[in-house]
Length: 480
Ligand SMILES: Cc1ncc(COP(=O)(O)O)c(C=O)c1O
Image (cartoon, rainbow, N blue to C red; front, top):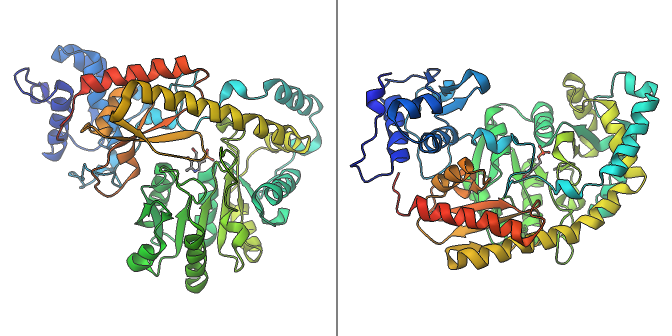
């Protein structure tokens, strides 16, 4: 493509990165650039057009985050091959084309980035105990570690999970009902294979967890956005919109991303709907272990008399995400169906890793670690909230949240949250835009921020000040 079409004008009153972003969009819409076409690297475009690299980087980040571009590691950046004919998506909200910016998914740096979401406090993990325990497993190399793993998971780990859930989440289940998987998306894959068909309709929280939404859409599911309010998913509204849905995906303990708990009447209404319509409830209980006030409501699964709830837990927050281990508890009547599906799809991976986690749980390290982490997270949350209040004052409103390892802040300014988050990423500040968690337009912009790795208030202050400086630079009233 002729670079002349991309050259921004210094006279124009829109910032240069925004002009560049728009010119690429126009080039794609007009067919001058086609799906799969390679685009110049940040460095070469910056040098060709005589722009700062950071400026080009912000434009590219936005294009990646909105699904126009895809990064392909060392092979460079291309116009997304998935664009097809959908060339003018709605920008006020996430769309099927919205993929999270590549760095939001994986940690490229060897250290946790400030505000990094989903990452537990890596410094507070009991590495010594872990290394001792896992070292023993490696040295002895028992036969079980060398044979084919059971597709449903390593039995001692399944037993340890069943015991833990009975005590901590009020879930009475046998180890037969527990399936170990490679992360939450591994659990979702198993559910799709066992119980759902491409084209099935499901309720999805609006706003709701970005990665699971992408996964389910990619698996061919049709998702009906059902609004979340201060009591969580609006079940009555869901019934009005799509009473005949086959499934509902919910985060009842801390709704992701708003942090509200699904109220008891709504839990009962959801269970009642699922029983009457023979629908499935996919319960995502990703971080219920971390709660700072009171006790969490019991899991939906503990109230599931008719066997409609598929309960999902993960080791990503309570241990660490690099393990890639999660679990799914299925109703007793579905055990055989899931065993058959799991056998076709080797979900849980290595016996060795599962045996290590089983040892960690059986020997009491797991509950000790959780007990230690609750006050640590409460304190780190406080570091971030105080720093935000001190530096940002009224410009950001921190949403009250009783648990979890992230906070949601609403912007009271007229910044575009996607632009702000994309610009923040170029400075190594890993905030997420609330708009990316939505599929419907909304006036309410916000930023999601992880706090687990702010060890001191000073660390939180440094990062919040950097974000504040960026807000001042980025400016308000940007109409995309
Ligand atoms: C809402 C939600 N569900 C589930 C998960 C767990 O995903 P995984 O097991 O793939 O790490 C996360 C992780 O961040 C999450 O935020």
